[in-house]
Length: 234
Image 1 (cartoon, rainbow, N blue to C red):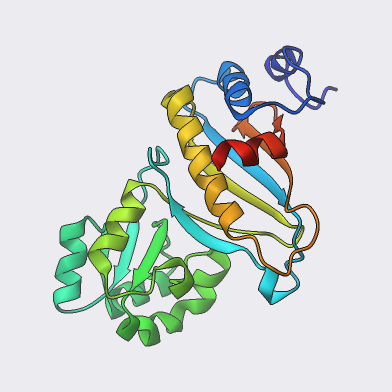
Image 2 (image 1 turned 90 degrees about the horizontal axis):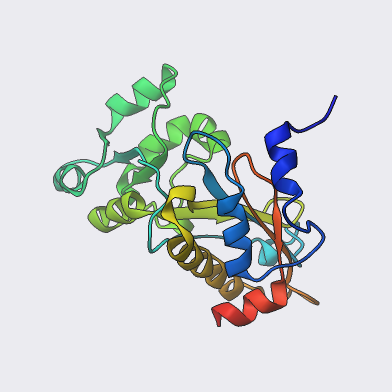
């Protein structure tokens, strides 16, 4: 029994999977290869020349994509007083304190991103074991522990993507939808790659950007030429 369906195999036959393409050519292949009835996400996987076991080579950050992600991100904010009002006015979907903690302790996790003011982290810590494994814990390094509530909520709603390198040295992220089209996806990917390149640790030796692959949710992966890509974003 074949591993992939006939539609997938049909699309794979249309290009050379061993070849490394320019960003523009790779995006065209990915968009043309989409065969599903739903609007697929365009994903990127970047193999980096880092050793995540060393703290100084742990790549973790966020970036706001110029054309958004195409997803309606549900934002939960832990805040009180004036900051609670600020969060609601900025478009946060859920705002509160102990009431939200109790709800989450009861098994509710119907939200995508979590933000907290610094004075609320003691309260949030009560559910750290629930939020942590789901990558929902507010994190100062990602800008989600802050008193600047309005700006961070607006950034998340407009297309802020958090990312981190996994234990194998690979960074994964969803950077938009097939329906965005060629120009918007090229712009989003360039913005993301630029950020990852800027984060290169001084202790990382050898080639930093080792391989890059993009694909739609159900489509085949298309390899990019790391050297050409690096030159294109500079």
